Image 1: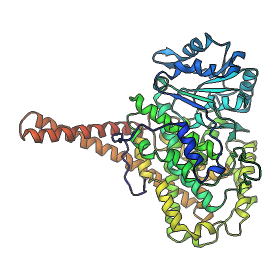
Image 2 (image 1 turned 90 degrees about the horizontal axis):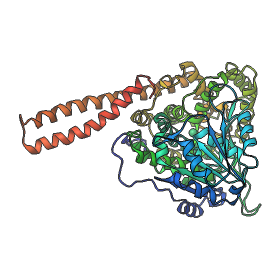
Image 3 (image 1 turned 90 degrees about the vertical axis):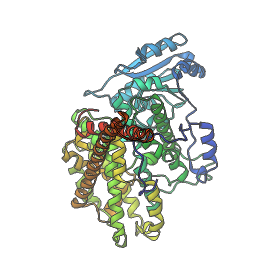
Image 4 (image 1 turned 120 degrees about the vertical axis):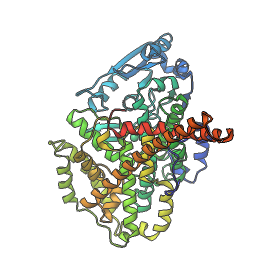
Length: 567
Ligand SMILES: [Zn+2]
């Protein structure tokens, strides 16, 4: 996808699908890629997906001999169903016949929402200790807790209950440490079960959130490329010096960019945009969405970092989620945040590329002063965490990024030396904010922070966007904006205004499509009465009406979200 190309958001799903998910083929492709020696092993053993996947759960558990010692199921208290049946009963029935089963319900340690915080993970570790096999039944948070609780060596089987995030199929957990969201290396699930009947029974807004989470592929992949181009990626130990096994995943900083790994999910970007509309009513689209999410998780896992799928948009979203958790408030679904933040990240990329086109790279990089930054971070987090613990946690990571950048006499030299070439690659990875906004609207997702199901105030949104680079080691376009002197208050205002324009434009396009549909339907109705025109003309009008009516559906969804209601 080039930046100039228009995206068929909400249009018919293109031929060529469904998205393939063949672990063996993927392993061999990765093994022959130029980056093979620095990739992590693909530790996900098996994906059982498609109709009837849950029926294979008992056999999948039985593959692990340790299961005879007892199976612990971790789940949240949220009721779950499939095809009108209670999912817990279904899982207990299928596993209880063959294994000694302990069903553990994890509850929020505080507040109303379950988080993967220290207390909850400790409870899960205690519950899982002694189990011969751990099964998680739930969405992203339960999966993250399960990956942290089931020690390596204990089989872990994940039953995915929604197409909500890409974290079902990777060896990381997003855990709250001192209130700060930290991507923490944990472990791969051994087996991932994805049953479309279960996905179809999930709340529609949870599945739509999966589309939002994947929108990061259009901005995070560019951030990852940038980190390599700028040379902030830490040099990795030579694998040969330590035998043939590369080091363990490092969640903190960026691994070197790999075209092959970025392409694992990014190759399905156009397909994703086309799948976005009509998701709620189509189990086939949901199953495909789940496959792209799985591929996105695998890309992170083999990269040994969330870099392929988590850039500036995720840092913004993490800050908003942390702020909500610190206040004990409900936050909107992760992917719903990410979708909105991806429009801002795309607008930031457009802003930075305009600045560079205007000569911003010709000046020396402006590196922040560490002491001033510590004060800045402390001030930034004081409103949501007066104890200062969050600020200290964030500064420790940010300071590592600053030290890496400062270790070079000219951190922008690599970028400056070959900017035209870099810009061509970035053009292939990025899409325009307008295209992202239109795809979100076609999926029934909000495009503005204040339109989120749990609305975020303009002030909080601005805080999260302005501060996003302060929360972690990984480098994003917001860091580059700062280095070229393009992250002043006026720049942030400009980026937020551009994102707003993209949202308004997408909503207007949806409304116009709705108007065109109505006009075409009138014309078709007139033709059908036989008042004028030959049969061939009537047939053409009827075709036009069908196409326009499909657009009108997308427009109606867009209108509902632009109004700010819950999806
Ligand atoms: Zn995510």
